[in-house]
Image 1 (tube, rainbow, N blue to C red):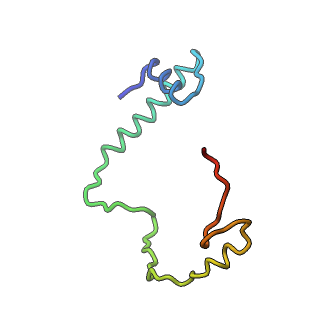
Image 2 (cartoon, rainbow, N blue to C red):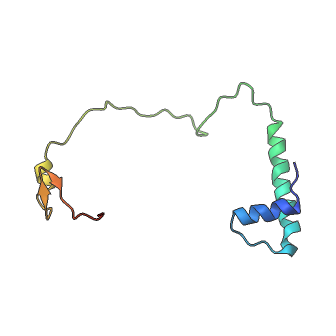
Image 3 (cartoon, helix red, strand yellow):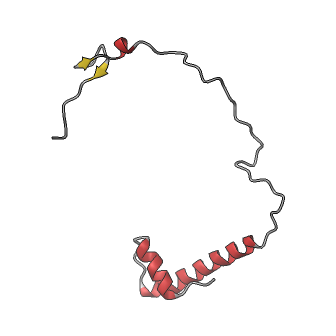
Length: 95
């Protein structure tokens, strides 16, 4: 795949980047080099390679999902300027 001058201008427009006419050729070469590298990567045989999220093998530390705190809503709203039934009361902002 190769990028032409029209595509470079379109990419610049989509990215909200002003590309002057004398810069189009430079960006065209750079984009074609990037796409060429990507095409090289697609030729690599990755059959049997496990997907990974890190270069270091890791396992997530799991813990039991239990409630360890709570049931003190009265203490939370005690300093609120206005509260009702342990909920914060705020002025209406939408009519």
